[in-house]
Length: 622
Image (cartoon, rainbow, N blue to C red; front, side, top):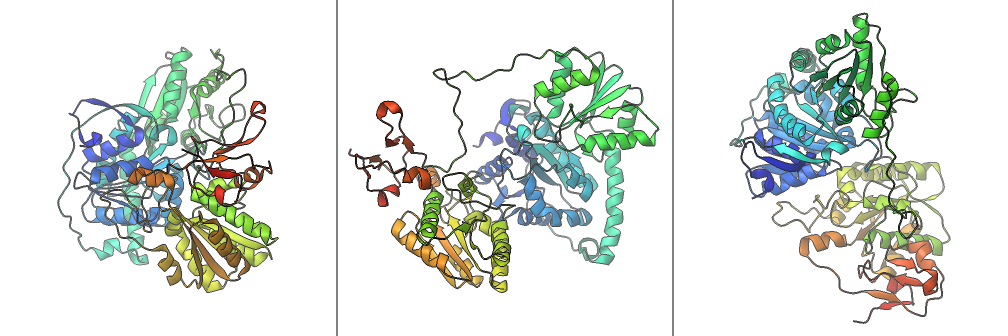
């Protein structure tokens, strides 16, 4: 039985923050989970998928976040508690639904997890999704630890039902991927079939209905504000004439700073977990006796601006500061030493800064950089090489709009196959704009999962508008970057995954594309010939590069190539492999080996691609 389904109430387990959220949802009796994978939220969906194979929990990897949110909304409207996890930029995709769903409301509890990513560990922006709760007018909870993540996830369902609104559970990477002790509660049974009650003049948002729904939403917000005032997730600790207001993971750093600086008897701390609507009366009561307040929050000055506004309504003139030069930045995530340093500076006490720890050098040398790289044997690298060689042979220079996925790593030399990127699905549409505005040869790249996520409308538009570019769909048979989750075009799926295969080629043809090539990128001569033909053509044309991610194949089938290759004495040291291909298994040896090209057999995947264009590479004899 899955670990998240075991354990007695009161028992403590070590969980990731994401796993704690799943456990809290299970304790609340969640019946349906719909998600599109995205780091740092991916483990929520992955664990729910595993659990769905052992229980009556319904789970699906939806084609994108908007679809996932609407599936979850339909279930919630029918009496099933539903969970919809996504990363922060995923909520942009689902925002159209979210804004009006707040008007429609829910019947059963519905929780939306927005996993924000300060410091952009795996994201294209650093947006602060707390503003979504304010804009949509829905309640928001922010955990600081895995234990709080579990408790808030569980409580959010009840809060949702009391207010008849979806609830936003806003996390950050440091909470999602922290492992901590979690006290278990009782698992709840999931209900039988739900029932959708027809109330069209409550749930169909035509203007006349929406006007009244907006009234109900404002009434629910007032009720939510009253609940925030008495929420156990908002707490005051300490004593003294100074104050600190914080939320989320920053609250942990504040607790450390106060203890380390010896300020427990000089500083009061207001830790907020129910952060929209804010508990105005509690905040004003906290501010009234204080001389100055420091606000510790990552990213935007969400709390700081709200506190200043509240203070102004009561004529309070105490300094309230957070984001300021030489204090906290709106950039990146915080860490304990930073919070301690700024706290000491703001309150004028001595810091106890320790010497920063430096990694020990290896053989007297600093640790080498390890830039992100496509794996050895990645089919994307093989396709990129074919495109590079086709353009080189044709004496053409290409512009490469790209998209979100493993293949975004084509940005780095020597591949250098990424010139423009905004968000998922943008490669097709930006390629259309670039090709229309210039006379340059445009080759766009998009992955199979991303194509189903948000590429279909762009390709339909490109055909309709008669644009002129080549779209390369890099089909590696999985959603690779976030952990090998399925999508509609996948035929190789985890055992028992209930899905129908939607052939990518037929989808592209159905969208009106008449110029279409399908190649295996590891068959270099065929791939190169098809690429040259596709590059030289005009209009909207699509080349599908079809070869599975070898890590995914190994994970699902346990199949791994035993072939390995070596560089022979025929190597002329032309550096072509380094300058154009850049497989991580290929490297230049040190001076003691004569500076020769080598293939690291421990890294080599045995894909046999390089042997097709380099006469110096031969199979390694067993």
